Image 1 (tube, rainbow, N blue to C red):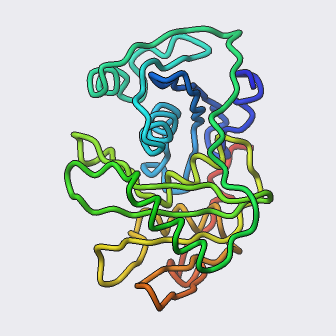
Image 2 (image 1 turned 180 degrees about the vertical axis):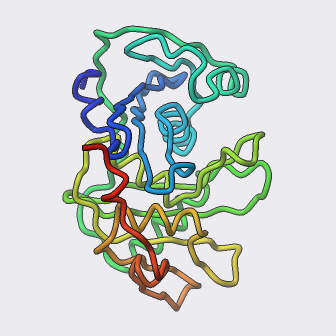
Length: 237
């Protein structure tokens, strides 16, 4: 994959401002990230955050962020470099093979439960110690996600949004059902921010919430976010 291809994966219906980058981990893995906009503008996931959290959520340590152009100080660049002690490079002709994050093959209900349980161990929760995992169906398998926290509490992202930003960055256009688990909670339900993002990217999918070992609850995005509004009027013509 190269930046020309990766840029096309950006979800930017409102600004048209496609942006991408790649995080290289200390063990040589590559984690792409693109700009993922939302109808609620403050919930937009920037390319740096997308790539970094994909790397961290895979249990890897980021080493370098590679950009196709000079990013300047955009998207809190100084903060991210200092937070993880990483470097930034500019290489417009850079090509890479993304880390294989997808879990292939159809999983049974029991296998989904077991996989979600295992994924919780990958959550990065230095502030809350509250782990959440998610699996997002795509056409050839599942994209995993876990919640990732950092020193600035406002910049953490939930498991549901990590999974969605990973899927978008990898070029998946058709997103199916999502499965969510939070083993330390008595009741599992996506937060308000995740509901807004789910409504945009999974309008027809179902969200299956694993409440405990024996009980799940299946809901739609519109049930999670009633009286939602559409973004057609916000899109640039």
